[in-house]
Image 1 (cartoon, rainbow over the protein chains, first blue to last red):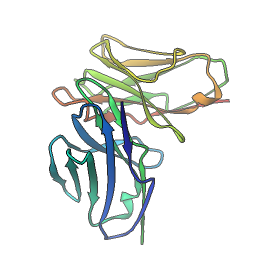
Image 2 (spheres, one colour; image 1 turned 135 degrees about the horizontal axis):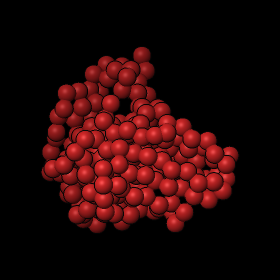
Image 3 (cartoon, one colour; image 1 turned 180 degrees about the horizontal axis):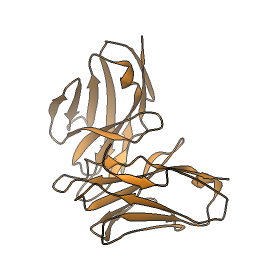
Image 4 (cartoon, one colour; image 1 turned 120 degrees about the vertical axis):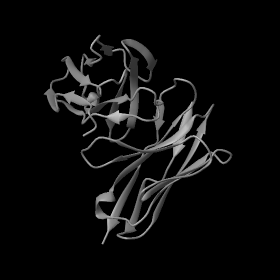
Length: 110
Length: 114
């Protein structure tokens, strides 16, 4: 099976940079995804890493180290609207479904 | 707006009852996934359909069933409802040519069992 660990809560200041870590254990590995979910809203796809390294999409970047079974989501120039829950998710192999972490609640303060 | 639609938005019912949740994937998407999200359990995968056929199954209770119709919309049926079934139910779809890792979620159905 798969299991993921991520911090339950993170607080950061508007305009700053925050990193949300995710470690995973899985038999087989296809990739690490990140999703954002605002309170009362639906999860929204942010990024996907299948290979080691950093992927950048605007203010958001995602990193993966397959050898360390570790990844992170980096949010730069934080804005109040970034306050949300962030989930990492892994897919073990083939058509196995995504398994989501329990989520990190990010609070951006002024 | 992800392009995935779900109805109804809210549903309040009593224990022992049966309900049906409906999902229409994005135009052209063949895969549909159902998830249950509750405060203490996070986002739990229930079941996946691909072009009308069941593709993968998660921790879906025997009281729950789903199907995907020829027009690709999907329905999740929940029966003999219990208080613990109160949760947000999401469906999601994956664009053709993309992997399961990229999913677009609908707005969800909030089910309250009294």
